[in-house]
Image 1: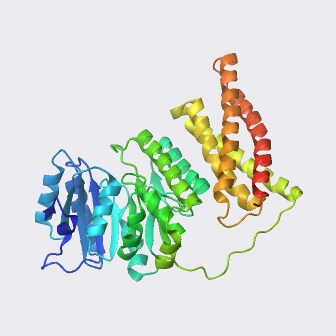
Image 2: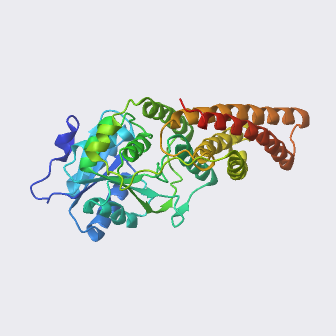
Image 3: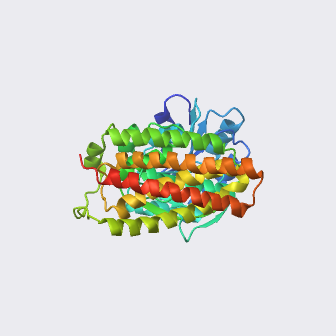
Length: 408
């Protein structure tokens, strides 16, 4: 059954099919080769292992190959399969349309390549069916997850999630794993506030859910990278950075009605948050040193991992940005004893100022070194970077202490 105009018409239940408890959406764009095996495998797994009625919605993102015809053939063969055709591209747009139109109480999605082992699907949605949790995500970054992918994607994934923790104070571990689920009533409240229609859709949805006090369940997954993935990593990374800036600005300025959403959907805390704990200068210096050592080690690891595929200057930028935002978040809580979200935006802006100065110091040091020595040994390069980072660290402590102790 296919609909190309009103999405709601594409998901009307067939009289012979029991009402679905779960609707799994598979967003696709030009996937005529992989779509058939994917849906057949997913359908067979759900039939054999899922104890409730289900449906599969293929959300076609304006494909220009034979994807739509393949999807319609699958829908004609399998009663649980529906097809939703959209006139414009965008994974976020497809998920919004399919989830908004679905009558199922639990909604999920997964990538067409089925990189995630389907054995994790029932553990993913079970807390939502029971009502214990509001959203659920598969995570490739848990200790018990088993992941097969290249070093470049590993660095980018971990760096992106670390950046989210530093800039948006997220508590979930993996924002971009294509294996998520949400209760329909929660989706109805969150989707109108999500602006992104592309790859940042997942992150924006999860950040809003966390800020609304919703419970996000995480499931460690087994995940094998698709070598034929068509995702443009650079374009996606730039779009994600723009999304972080837009969402962060909206959160700082209060443009989002989070209080209303929290009152409507959120779970109230069981206890009041702890009061701020004052910390003296000697203890601040000791804690700042510990955080600084950890940040420097993390910086060196990230730089070494990214140095080969990206080059010295891009690797320096990536490593410094990721560790800078994480350093600000860690020092805010551990060094200066600041809890809660009050003034968090101002503190992170101060941290970004320190980041810019640190970037100038380290990039300038690298440029001078390469101009003087041509292609220096890696050990010499690291020594220069450590020295530049020490200077940036002293400046960071001064700026952060001024920001944390300023009370308007």
